[in-house]
Length: 535
Image 1 (cartoon, rainbow, N blue to C red):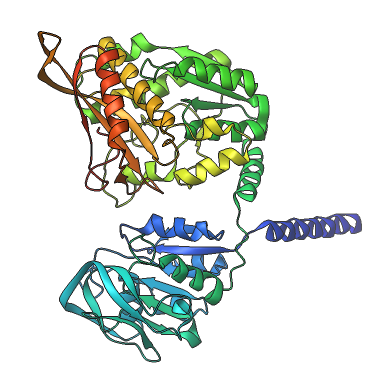
Image 2 (image 1 turned 90 degrees about the horizontal axis):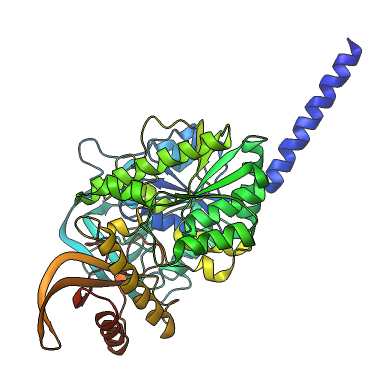
């Protein structure tokens, strides 16, 4: 009995030591409490840019869960409702009495006012877009910004009466309370959006909250994230076998290398060459991952299978669903050849999840590795190591993992491949035309030294034909669209201002070197209202 008690005490001490080590490894973090606004993920990303880890939870999460996580601070996001309306999204008063610094943004500011006894009413003058704002420099939030600046407003309600103990710290011509605070309680609120680029010095305002109010150290860096992710993956996977969905794109490549670092040869990468890839891409993928990284790589050449499934299909959502299901079926078949496989790894990143309409979000388009998965998948589980990362963070992780720079900065490519860059039905002839045209476009962008300035650029073969003339003859051939965007998070994007001389060279080369194209246009639409991809 005494021996058993000694063993039990030793086990308790060992468990406490493990917990203490976990606390040492744990980074400080900030909670982004999501009330359903359009910039919620952007807020988290802006926080992470300051080397402070941010995670997003819905406003429906319980207070106990929030208090248990020891957050350094909480940011309340915008939202589409009115705080005084029926079924308003609110949070209990105890959150504001917990001693945690809180910053309310837009709707989040109104939540703070409403819950703490202030009053929110419909605004006589609604504010949308760029607005002149005047700050009180005595506030910790605004100590490092100009007294008069530009902010981005988007509200129909306003804070008409402040809660007890609060003071106004910013105003606009139409908004008497553009910001308020109760410094003693660590409660701050802004009616505008500091997270968007349109707000001048918005980054400085967020930094002030994180470092001057919350006291963050800013010690979350990508190398730590990668190291911890590898350790977690090693622990989660154990001695089980893993199959990775390898497309050769940035996301799946980084996911594959991360898993490979964790479990080595327990990972088998299945590269589905569905015949919808860019020029020479299949051979490049095989060379890099089998040769350079010494991975177990299976190349499944299934072009005919995919094209037969897609024959005559013109609806983009149907294309995505077909490709998503066929992807999984190929993986299952390859897994049976390999032997028992427990997990499927995918390169899903956060924008994929958002656009696929998880939770209350609207479905923009289904991603083959999110909304397009069949429900009867036969793997025991799916591992998505990049699910919480934005595209720029994925690239940073890739460089940290030692992936070559040219691969990390490879152009983003959708899982369905060229199927969603060919409008209308998919045929081998159309694929050949688009591959050649797209290759020329990418080559000329690189030659012009614009490949790092334009975040994504590609060609789209439309289903439109137009009359043209080549030599002395009439032509009736395809219209090709070129697309280039600049973005930091792929949630929003502006069209890239590609110089006319570069577009001119691209156009002349494509028309002269690629058959069946006689007209080229450049897409000058931003996101929103458009998406980056055409389908």
